[in-house]
Image (cartoon, rainbow, N blue to C red; front, side, top):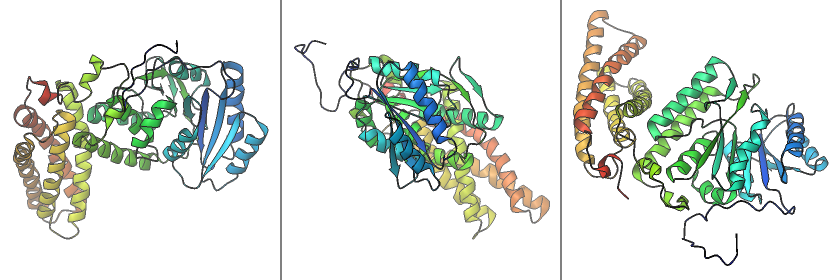
Length: 427
């Protein structure tokens, strides 16, 4: 690019994407981070395998960084030995756990223009690495992710992980209007200048780090490139699926709430090439029935868990009817607020009080159904167990949910033609 060519530079806007200068050998073009915790068995063979692959197939300079997450076994010693014996390998030791913390630490300090990471088990076929980073090197994209759910991917894993993965991505699409297909595949890359602005906005330090980073990037209009991958599940994985899923759902709720309130400064990540018409729908959820139904179900699932937790807590000190009414009231307020923004795309405070009042009226319908179900159960059994109460409440809530969606769509949040109401403010 000629040095005398005029360049427009705006404060808070990323510079235009350019093909990275790859001629010099003074620094690596790619820095691949491998976060590890107690991986003394797999670390050395996996690092050597990755190094051999990059040396044989990657046409630019590279570095492999082992980010040790406070391991308690021999992992730190192995990482240090690898850094001493293999020139392209370095080791970073952290005193606290967290994949997101490890990535933030290493990426923030790296001088490589392209930053990537992959899981130590190398579940993803390494032949996808060059297609992953090539669009970032060329300047085509800002981030790149490996996707196990994209067309052309070949995946070997058990039905439990398959169900969890697809359910999680469905929740993201329904609640946060995410358009990327796979949030949790441990195979991602980002341009350094993008990371410098994006990472300070990502709060999570654990497994939700990936999802939060992608959601913020997509909402800001950054370009995310997806690569289909061949992926084989590691049967010896130590990831706690239940705990990870719980933390992820908490993260979805936190990010969704922040987006609904408009507290995230996404303008810092504005696309350098100006507005893309396809990004105008990102600010709000399209009003189609299918999209709204998916979003409503995702919000409903989270609200039901919240409701059941509140009911179990209140039931410790009060009767079933009082506990049900209090839990349903609090969860109804949260449910209306979440559906207002995430399902029906309503932003700002306009009509917020009215919507909550209408939501409480819909809550009354749910209260009548659930309270009536409890009364019928008590009349039939005399002194039902808490398990029986919970089962009846779940069934009653399913019926109330269907009616609630119809009332929300037809009465509380009816379709309107002006885009400021349905899709957020116009540009």
